[in-house]
Amino acid sequence: MSKQGKLAPAGGAGLLGGYLDALALVERLHRLLLDVIKDEFERLGVLDINAVQALLLFNIGENEVTAGELKSRGYYQSSNVSYNLKKLVETGYMHHQRCEIDRRAVRVRLTARGRAIRDVVAALFARHAEGMEGRGVIDVDGMDRITHSLRRVERYWTDQIRYIY
Image 1 (tube, rainbow, N blue to C red):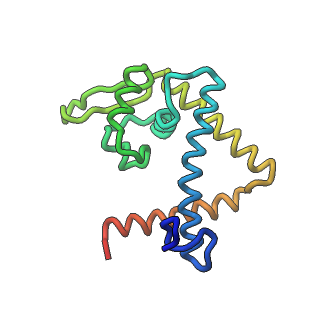
Image 2 (cartoon, helix red, strand yellow):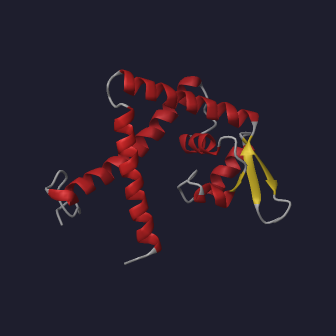
């Protein structure tokens, strides 16, 4: 291990170096995405919602789901889903209701106010896609290759959790 606690230096030789660089990049990209969303809402003067909550509203879209389904469907990846759901309900972005069949489960869906936030995020992402293509940052084929590779890594990690070997 190096002094920074990594297995190999960034940009090191072989797959391990590239893997560590990719892990760091994915983490930075996620944080940067949240900053971009936050900046968009600050620009619009929408200050009662954070970027994680806005991304959650975008991911839920028109679906009605339980809190448990948020993670299983990949809409939410963090551990504090209850806090964010409570805040979104309190601020009027989300409606919640006890499930008729299983009274322990709570189903959530976006309110009109939540759908407006989802639309802002969707428009932001559409502008990004158009801008990246227009500036030659990436084209459809390049994005398909990245997405395909990331799905394969996701599948590998999922297998590691399910079938430790």
